[in-house]
Image (spheres, rainbow, N blue to C red):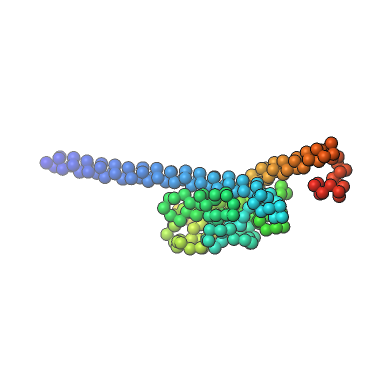
Length: 248
């Protein structure tokens, strides 16, 4: 009888251990799926932001800022870009803009907690008339101490126990250096267990490369138009001629 009892005890212990194993395995798979969803959503948002910057002249008009500029973050959680921007502003990624970019479909990745992306831009990318962004721009944003970033996207994880949600306080969603611009981080050595932000940056070159190609295309159209009228392309001296408005 004692042998039967011992056998039953071993079987029960095995079943309990197996149940815990399956639970842990399922949780791990769920976490992996969540990580994939977040990474894909961040990448998609980044691609659309780069596309927006490349086409910013179309969005803001000829009298507005030139190519390479983005919109301001949402700083009051109304879902809209809030202009004018402060210095290197940090806020939520707007759910909607006055364009057809569809960013509102990318700000949530449906994992059961407040999932609005946070968003920071370098001041040079502001849509304020007069802000200058070009290949000589030295951006102020950094990630883990590495410079060269003009925008940063951050996906907050679940509340870590001391964060009070929903609010409009950055510290209730982001941790460590991510609570303030311009120095962002992908880890926290001081309190690693409480850090769950996912950070993705946009480097200056990731915007200047397509913008340069776009500008070159526009210049080519002007040069071709000039050649069509005059029969030849302008020489170097022609660019000093005030009569050539298209090239001033």
